[in-house]
Image (cartoon, rainbow, N blue to C red; front, side):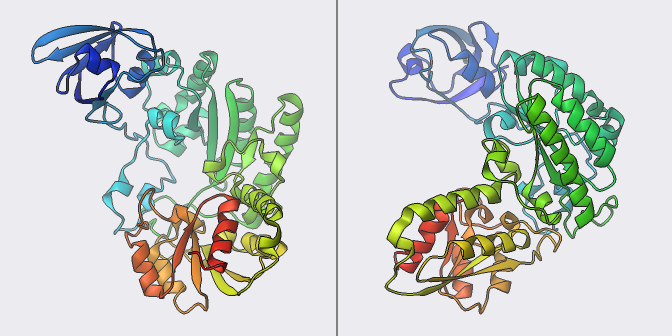
Length: 438
């Protein structure tokens, strides 16, 4: 196994040693380099023996550097190997529910533990062998984010569509024994892996020391499920039953483990028509990227920023009319949050949009498209429209349907302003729009 070195950083230890672009990295300190995880771990040393191929000639370079100083090599692939793809056939796979005109990159089904470590994406571990699991432990790849869904091996095999799913509890215990911690999630489907199955999942996961938290998320169903298994959204009473199970276990585990451990997503509380817990109940918001505590954190941060703003929120020389476009699920919460802490000179209306691209059962703000903004915000009386930045691709101005931010602004005839995820970002944007700075 070897990796083509695309570039060598100027003034780096590798450059000083004589390693060149075009060389092929094979080993570091005698160990085969599988991927970027190996490269990072093996180069975090003061003394390195780096073996490369230059043409057909094997060369060894002995390098001394500061322990955590970068070696300075750049490779053709950032991960130094291909993305590992999913081998499952999950009952609720979101990729299988995409519209026909979704771009090809959205259809890639990845299930790569390395991306879990580096980016916090969830993986099922069904494509991880025992040997690879040992490499995770040897490289101290912690924490990982694991899609559990349920711990009953037969049920998990059915939900994920592969008998390899039955190995999960052995894998999690092995990781925990090896010092690797995991944040877990369950995507719950009514009548399938909730109820008694959920109780078992919570109990069994909470008994493994290395499991740090468990997020509960309702199944996401689009309007494009032709030919797929019959699933349906949660009713209010069913969602409340999930929240009740979670709250029961949260109280028990806070007493016995010192952590609430189980964290229903905001969607479950909204679907259950139940109050979202207070700030301290989220214990640092470690599962926030799974939609756990997003609204509570936004409210907490907005309140703190509003209190710190002083005269800026109570005095104004002019008045502007602003609109916030969001998903249906966040509409009432945002309207209440803003009404409790008004900003002088800013009249703000909140508009929950129906998702026509994925289907009306998709109610989260991050999946609103440019087409829905143009279709439903046209003619809304306001001076500017605010949206959450997560509607756009990272470091880009494109929505999921490939319309662009300038296209939407032009169609609406007014600025469409992306807002950061933090509460202070929202308040700052409101104040800057009111004061004519945007």
